[in-house]
Length: 387
Image 1: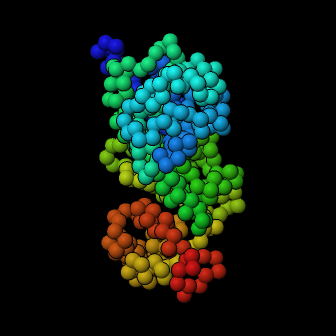
Image 2: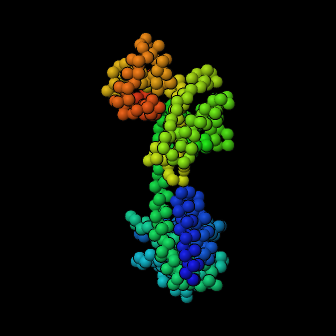
Image 3: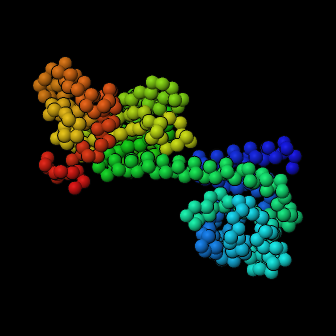
């Protein structure tokens, strides 16, 4: 293997590993890249050192032979059982089981040989808490044992593959975290979703799904959020595009508060805000917008709790709750019988106490705080909304 070819193989393998970190479905592409360069078939497998027969392929490209391995031959894989006590990061099968011994085993005669395979190599990825994760490659007798330069290539690639696996795990955890946040909102009747600058929905909770499928003015077309009539659709698209920064992370990403009527005439409010970078599900996505839907079916904001948690006066808590419910400053001023300048002064005080400086951020912070929502049937003295 000349230097240029080796460098090309290294780059291709690393590129495939990090592509898989961003999209778990692409680990099969990584295995294809491995076997394209080294021959044979490959798998990423897990095994317990305390029980070597308990080895299990997490992903492989053995097709139907992979299923028979899981069902029967994993307990008869002498390469694994004979590897006890061998802690090499790159372990050719010949070091665990000489060819003459391998050829007398059921594992070889009934599983390896029907596939035209004989030579293997195991490349350790992680070994934590008694569980080892490795990349295994098996190839035909015509390709022979894994040569020194091939083993060296694998030794250089494996640390990068391990980092890719760890990165993928972190991204999946962030995905689940974001999904969990949206699901928590669903339990108190709040619909929420994230989407990119083009309106493509990334994650939506159950409440948002019900709203989008109910025949309301909001809808999903080809995986993208839309609304009717056309004028509202245009406003929504502009708001999402601005909140997601046009997909380019420019400064000045802005939020908006939109209002529309449901099929029954009930008001629906949509808070569209930039999803902070630290809250994003991972770098596979461009900057995202967070949309929170409000309607009369949502448990109301408990103004007494609001005042207690943020140290607001009764008037300030009333105003804050009204804004979350979709009122404008002018609407609230007319309803409570005070001047608009007075309401604006109250709003400034609310901003200072809540720690925001924009109305859209205030709505986002208060609207997503489950502690501020009153359960159906709860009283003002009920100590906890989930009690």
